[in-house]
Every structure is written in structure tokens, then in C-alpha cells.
Length: 250
Image 1 (cartoon, rainbow, N blue to C red):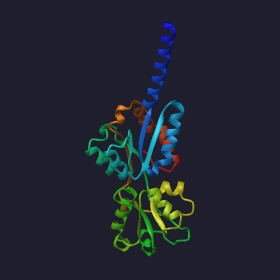
Image 2: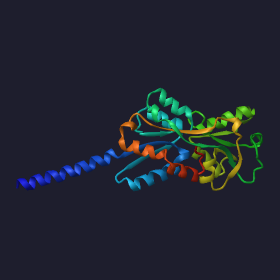
Image 3: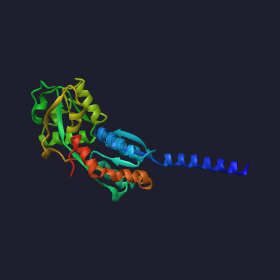
Image 4: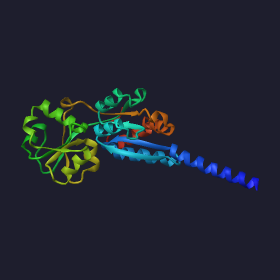
């Protein structure tokens, strides 16, 4: 009887230990919406070779994600679509300074109806409705506004802009024909657009380079599985996947 009880206790302990390991293997990701396909592929590849790992993915505007992390939302890894929101969390000591690095780069483009005769920033003032991400939280919108100001057309566009919650919603408005076109990242236009095409690439001199910094959060540093996955994000295999999806890497 004692032997049976001991065996049962060992079995229960093993089950509890296995359950604990499953919880310990949870990785919370807060990632810019434009990286959705890339991160899904990277996470799926990792899960295939790391049994029991569970990814909880949160995609959205970089500013919205940063605010969520500031308010206590679970996040082990944060990837922003600009340096501003990474700096925001760094100043609040919510990300690990030593882990901050550049994940990838992108380009800002204008995508719209194929029949539109629009080939430059100066041409868009002729349009009625133009979608951009809300500059307060969406880096793509912030990049676009910077370009408008440098091109000297910001005042002419004030009543023409339609604000979106993130770059994917921005693209959706254009793809559905609800606006004439949208300022989005090149990778989004290439991957997710169905009814529109890239009409021109915004010259780099008009806006800061689209940069995706990544970092472990202060809680992510304590998550061993998150730290291992984070290392894979900086690997050559990850760069291959980024290039496949149209991103620029070092």
C-alpha cells in the first residue's frame, strides 16, 4: 500500500512539474503590426523544435503597445516600428537596456488605386481622401507627417487625411476603396494589398529611416524561454525570413 501511495505521489508530482513547465514556457510578444507575418513564421518555427512553448501575440500600433506595457500588460519581448517608443519604455525602465538592438528596416510608400496618376508627394494634393496611421501612436503615420512637412504640403492635406489605428487598418481602407490611397510600409503593400499597388516610394530624405528596434522587457529577462527565443530573433535564420517578407536587414 505504501509503495502504491508513493508511486501515486511521484506520478502526481510529475504531472504538476509538467504543468509548471508549460506555464514557464509561455512567451508574451508585443510587436508592431507590420511584422505580423514575420513573427508568426518565426514563432511557428520555434514552437516546432521547442515542445510546450506557448506564444501569446499582441500586434498593434507601437505607441499603443508601449502604453499597454507601461500599464502592466504582460510582455516579454517588445518590437517597435520606430526608436521613439522603445526610448519611451527605456526611460521608464520597462525594457532591458542591454538587449536593445535593431531587428530590421523598412520603407514608406504610397499605395493606391492602379488607375491613379500619382508618382510623387506633390501629386497627392489632388486626391480627396488619404489614409495614414494616427501619428500619436502609429510610427508610419508619424513618418508620413514628417514627409508632408518637409515636402511643404502638410497644410494642403489637413482636410484630406483619414486616421487609422495601425498600419494594417490604413492599408485596409485603401484596399476597400474607402480612400484613394494610403501611406504604409513597403512590406505591407507587397504582402497584404489585393486591389491596390505601390504608386511611389517616399524619398528617404523626407523622413527618418523606418527602424524596428527590439528588446526584452524587464519581465522578459526573467523568462528563460523568452530569452532563448529572443536570441533566435537575432540569428541568420531570422534574417532570411525577414528578407523573404521584404524587410531590410544588416
